Length: 194
Image 1 (cartoon, rainbow, N blue to C red):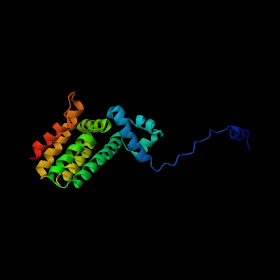
Image 2: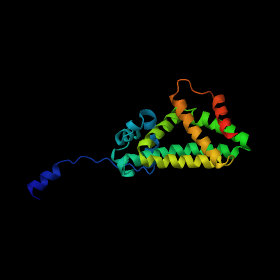
Image 3: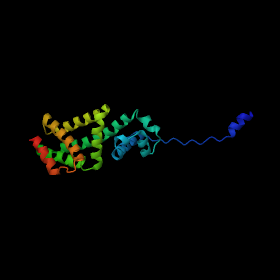
Image 4: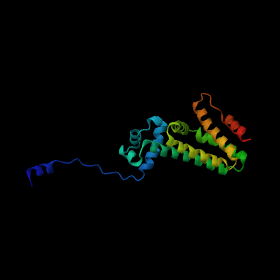
């Protein structure tokens, strides 16, 4: 063996950390992205911030998502799916139109407005979708699911108007220093659904 090869062999190579096998990493990144958005807003939801919060290497975010918009879309789609699934459950359980209005009022006050996190995520999605076309696909799919759930008890036009009112009330409640009471929300829903 030449002296040069012997010298290279004598130099210790740094020990490589074993790779973590994490089949759920993509899901972890999506869940963590929602946490980061809830805490820092969309503007603070960078690859770096999400990777740090998820305690994964920075490269994991770009390995699983081609862009930050793709990661945000996956995160918001998960949030929208959770909220839409709850509305669908409430509408299926409502035996009639009056009960459906009560269920919609509870959905709004408990599922959308009852949690600061859910409220912030909804408002962040609305704002981000106004600027990022990829996120409009998420909001459009969410609106369609909401309308289909409402159409169990209301005609298509009324379902769309109720859905728009719900979205407007979410923004109103988030921005108001004097938010509407649950009774006022219920009254507003009744005025459209007469």
